[in-house]
Image (cartoon, rainbow, N blue to C red):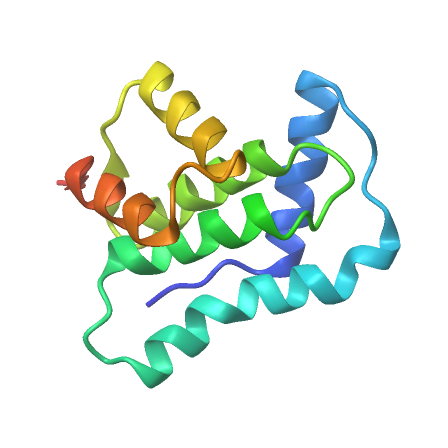
Length: 128
């Protein structure tokens, strides 16, 4: 399994903020980000039957809900999900509108982590 690093997430967030606008990250959120990014690895370590979709949802849910950054949390949650799937040989097939709707609902508390995992599982395919 390939994991997302804190450096990669910070670079991705910086790129998203510069491209789409928003507030720069606040350094005091380091502990939240570290905990959020380690959770999928812990999940896999203690649950050998966890699926790739569940691990991707763990990243997405954590980044959307833990507010690791001062702005752009939904964006980084989606990007992290997408990139985690890609580096592990899968691509997200959902439309941009469907993905935006799903992550908006996730941030609003209308989608649980388990529901996000189900949505991801229904919208991925192996990269050939």
